[in-house]
Length: 496
Ligand code: FES
Picture 1: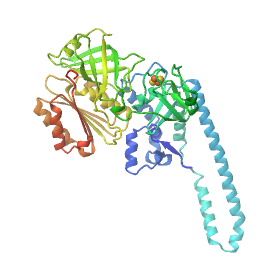
Picture 2: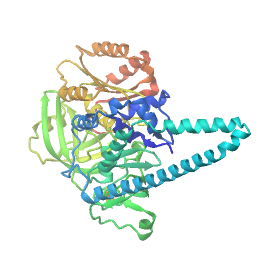
Picture 3: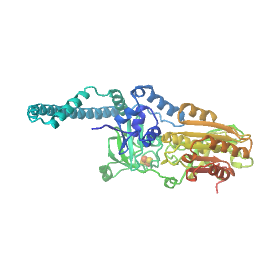
Picture 4: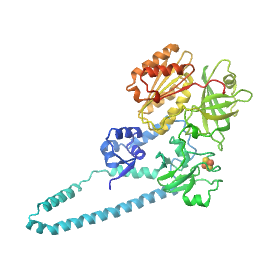
C-alpha cells in the first residue's frame, strides 16, 4: 500500500515550509490523496541529500523559536514525559508489528504465485501459450527489481523519530494541523500553531474549549473544575486546555472563522513594562491574569482605559499565540492625555482595563498568496501582530515587509525585523524613509514597481490617517486587486 504522510509532517521531515510544499502541489510536482502526500513523491521531490541533512529540521525549528521570539513557553520541558514517550513507542511498535505481519503475508503470497507459475510452466510450453510466458517473464523481472529497493530507511527512521518526539493534532472540520511538543496542552500548542481554537479561561473552569476526540489517545495533564457529563465523556469529549496528545490525534473542535466569532471581553491587565524608543512612540507591555486571558485575532485592536482618562483605542502588536503577554505600540500625540499620561507611567503593575477586541484587519488564512505588509510609522504595531501570526501559521510562500517612516519617526524595532529577515528564507524586510507625505506616495509606487505580479499578492497596510485613503487609490492604480487589500488606520484617537 502506498505510504501517505500529512503535509505538516512532510514539511518537518524534509525541513521546508508548508507553503513550499503547497506550491509544488499547485505546480503538479506533488500529488495529494485526501490532503496527504505520497511519501514516494516526497522522496523524489526532495532528493536524499537534502533528507540526510540532519541539521535541517533543527535549524528550521531554531529559526522559528528565535524569530517568533514573543512566543512564551511555560516552564514545561520540551521533551514529552515518560508516560507519553512510552505510549508513543508502544504505538510505533504495534505499527511495526502490523507492518511485519503484512510483509510476511505478502512474501508468502509471492512465493505461492512463483510456485504456481513454475507448476504451470511445462503445460504452457506444450501449448505454446505466449501470454503465459509473457506474464512469467514480467513476474521474474518484477521480482528482480524489488531486490534493490530505493533506500528510504533514513527518511522512514526520521519520520518515526518525529512521531515519538511530537504528536500531530488534526482539527475537524477545518483540517488544520499542528504539533504538540513536550507535554503542552492541546490548546497551548494549537494557539502557538496559529489556530483560533475556541476557549475561555484556559484553566479548566469554563468548558469552552470542549472538543471531541475522533481518533488517537489523549492524556489529562491537569485537574479541571469543569465537569463533563457521563454522556459527554462517553462520546469522547475532553477539555483541550487540560489534555495533551499522546499519539497523533484527530479532534472535532470549534475554531473562530473571523472577528465575529471572538467574544467581547473586559479584563484588567497590569503594566509590565513601558518603553519609549523615541519621542513618537510608546511600547506598552501588559499582562492579563493567568485565569482571564485575552482571546483575539492578530491585527485587532482594544479599547484601553487608564484611571481618570477617557478610553483610547489601541491596536494589539503581539500575536494571539501568547494570550497573556500583550504588546501595544502607541503613537505619542502632543495634547493627547492618554499618551502623555502613559509616558509618565513608570510604575509596573498599574492597572489598565481593556475592552474588546474589535476590527477586521485580520489575516485571510485561506489565501495561498504571498503577503506584502506595508507599515507607516507606528502602523508597524498591528502589522507586527499579523507577521508573527503568519509565521506561526506558516502558510504564505513569501512575506514582504516595507516599513516607511516619515520625518522624526524611526524604525524603532528595526532590529527585530532584520532578525526575521536573517533567520527566515521567505521573509524580506526593507526599511524606507519618506521626507514628507508626498514621498510616501513615491515610495509606494517604488514598492509596487519592484514587485512581480502584484495582482497575485495579498496586501496589508497600516498607516496614520489620512494616508490610508490615498494609499488605497495608489495601490489600485498600481494594479493591486481590491479584494486582496486590507487597510487599517493607526489607532490614535479616543475610543468612540
Ligand atoms: S478554556 Fe475554560 S475549561 Fe478550557
